[in-house]
Length: 459
Image (tube, rainbow, N blue to C red; front, side):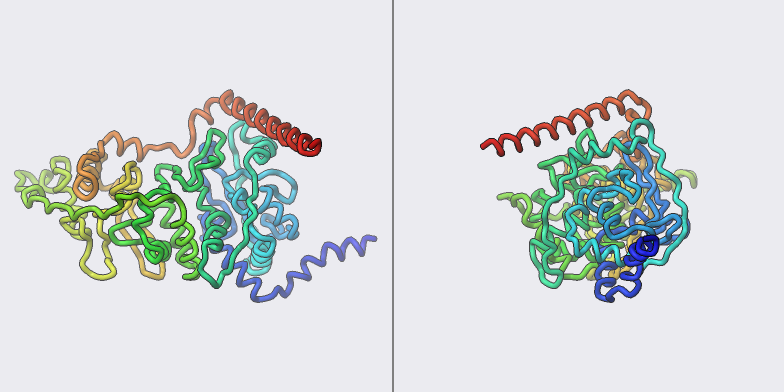
């Protein structure tokens, strides 16, 4: 009996000892499409899957786990069934629950074939690393992982999807990538009080720390062609329309830029089916050239005054820090494709919320794709909040909408946006109230489901 049990444990290992090279290649590609390395990377040594990266959430920092095939601290002891349960149910091998920082609500709709290919890749194509990741420490009651059972009962509803053809461009393939591996809804869908994606709000815009993940169903997308959107996903830049910065830059660099052209086109084609195009969609008129006098800093009696930005206007700050790259009129560089992008008409400048414009200028851009290295320095360490406000206000009103001003108060609020939700962390009663609400809603949903089943049986 012991020999039989030993052989049963050994069979999965033997089956993966020499996996099919095509399956391994597919699994590696799916891991790229899922951007697994973005969260599971080791910030100390750069290993893409050995864990330790801190994921900020409203409840506190969640530590991304080691997903290398290490039998000590990784997933080396996971069977395919264990791995499938992680992806579909958000539960580890020991049965404990994961927090939805792991987007299993999206991965739950992956096909069996794709989950099997991912498993083969992680078990045999990734080198094991025995890196021990510190345990996640959230405040009570969120530290009680069992509460996730009630959360899952309310919000884990896998949507049956077909993977579509990876070789052909099609809406079905694009929908599959967007809703599963791309888990675009994790950032671009608004969240409810219980931190779940709002039903009926898919891709209608969300918050990622201080950044605003834009509404992907809104009209602006219809000013983009399929090829333009696919090009943006490949390079992170679409002159005159958008530049990827912050988390989106990371997604482009590590995931979208490494997909096949057909998959990028499929994603673009699907996104362009969402929402409705406006009747009055039209391009913005070119900006009026600013008066030369508005750029001139003029002489200063002392050196400090000459090099200080405290007395400069927004136009003068733009001329000193930005115009050499982006042009005096925000037209960008004159080469093709543009090395330094145009500002006029771009999404960050036109967005009703100034958050992304503020964050892009404050944090800069550092993105590397096959198209090259895109870099802009971070100005938050070079300018005061008052200087940033004057600069940003000039950019917004000159290259975007004339009456959309940016104040120093808005700049400070955006830059000081808390990574966590202090009222949830510092008020245990609030967390306990949410837990009670979660249990009540889960029980109510369960009873409603049973009642509807009984009524349908009676009929």
